[in-house]
Image (cartoon, rainbow, N blue to C red; front, side, top):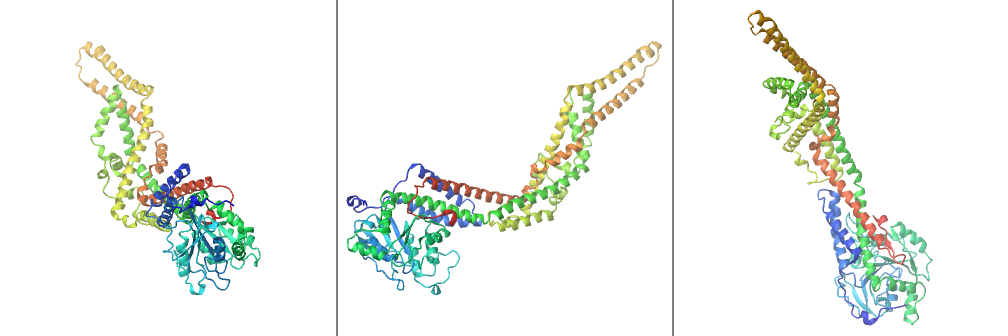
Length: 619
């Protein structure tokens, strides 16, 4: 089994490596995206929890990135009496830590085992309360080995149940030491026996620190215990671990062979080979890179699992906004339709004015303009009567042009204060279920003044929508007015009567009274003017009648376009904005998770002996 050249490993110093390459470029972009995403919605309770957790993960990621090239720290973890310390002695080539037995656990103080020429000043072993031991064994020449405290030394009766949010080590001093040690470990070597492999305490502790850390699995006491590897594998897989291999060996036998100078054998030899090939030298950098990617993906999938619990509530809020908006719009549609039918003269007047404005060039056009001028002297005040008339009159003005009657005007559109408050009350309950907090949704902002501002916006939108609808109705008539044949026909009819009357009056004057020597007078002019006016009003009535054909149908089409105007959106804008922001946050979470999974998949190096915590199961 090959070993690093001692000259090359002499006083190995930790290095800060600037990670390059396409993978780390994508990873840097991913981390930057996660940083922005985690802080993008401070008013949402799930997002606040995720932001807090990301701050802890980001610190660890930064630490892992900065020390990609230093040797790996392997934490040997196992329950009481599993032969963990005996295995450490076998790997160190001599007794470096006191080994106990099934009834007498001994590992309370961590023991750090490092090669003779390995610089570990970067490892805070004194802060961990660990004892440092040097060894010249080949197995520890390229790694740092830590014999971790037993997590189950203190009995369950003496251990208080951890409160929500605490780590599994809460309330147990020995497990407190274990937690401090595991934070500095890069790889976990899990040791168990036929008696301990179902230990809940050990499994919980390992699972808490497994994200981003590969694992090796070892069954000890092989000389006296049955082979439980398959059963243990199934147990580990149900806990979310991927287990490519479990080594089965006897630590006492391996230590004895090393003491007698015999070469390692069996699964102990295979374990040494796995450490050498997968944890030492360039493999250490690969392990750290994989750990960085896995930890990020694990965090995102864990966040996704937390968000999955509130997705139905967010969807419910979004559906509630749509339902309440539709309900309010139906009330507005009924109110506007009633107002339009009651204000029939108002929108008919618009069509009349458009006919007069568009009809240019000709005697009949002059007649229409004259009638419109006379009507304009007294009809404008009547046109602005009612809410529809006031809205149309103020469609191009600011809020000051909208009736100041607030609720009274909104009520004319079919909405009452009770209807609006009902919608807001329903949405407030749904927003609370989704975890919306200030400033995302703040009921205190929905004061009378804020509600009044929303009503003013509604009235302005209603004026713009109604004016736009009337413009479309008028535009359809405008095309008919602009047709030359249509206008020419009425101009010819009006001008024909005018010319006929003048011709008749001329013939009567020159052929009768003038040659007879009678006085002419002005009676024929009055008679001619009367016929011209009557004929002009008749033609005008025909034109306007044609223009008003299908007006009820066009009115129905205008009302069908009411949802596109989003008139009632200002009344529930706070909740609509909250729902959009939550859905945007969820979509960003899905996108970042997919990017992280793609990065992890692209970093796969094929089968090996290192296990891992499967992200899908752990999340």
